[in-house]
Length: 351
View 1 (cartoon, rainbow, N blue to C red):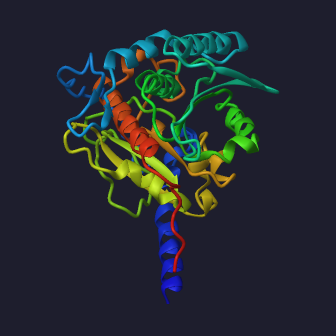
View 2 (view 1 turned 90 degrees about the vertical axis):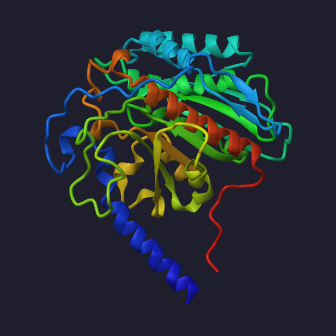
């Protein structure tokens, strides 16, 4: 009876998620409820004293790394150029590897037939605990400087590299910067072909656009026929997409941070590895799903919120600073929990 009930719940979840599948479609194919022009977003006030935040140890001796808005936004400015051609992507790699070396990491250049990934890791104190991989793609589409897509993701990975550089954790911390995501997830597909490395990974966090928010009512759009109540009519939340086979990994982002003023988080569990919702497979988390590795996509919902998606005006000036800093803090908080928690993050089988 319990088994049949579990199957019924999965089928109901699939029906719900199918309505959400349009979130990650291209603008020209996305069925929108209403095509209302997006007004210039209202900036959310910047949190006080968030420009010089750093690593802290609380009274319980728990490591609580805190992001720096200055560091994050500096990376966005340094990557303020199209990263589409081989020369442009090479310049991007130079910046990323220089930053990693500055923080004390030893980046590795990993080539594949059409591109180049960057990989680095810090060995955990427990060699049997496995690894957590934090990743983002660094390439852009043609004619776009990609401040949100995806310099924001790169900036957060670099900030995690800085914060954890001299702090050992039980699990190994791995960092990856994927090339050619915009050409069809080519970098992440090349990465997952390294079977020996995948055996050690306990969970993956992929960031793809985490820096844009809008605070004007109605500026967040949704696919037609969405069968759930939207969390907001504003684009002020962070979406996290994970597969139902690894719900504990996804639920790491559902933990409330009561002492921090952070954006709301909408977690979306996807059944059947996205077979019913192919539009949720459009970023670098997807190749991991099909290797049986738990991975989540963290995003600001892309073109459903931002008028700058894949456009020349995807510029640093259009990044919403307080939202971006808050999103980065959410990711750092989840990364910390995953690195410290023992065991795997798979969904227990139904009994």
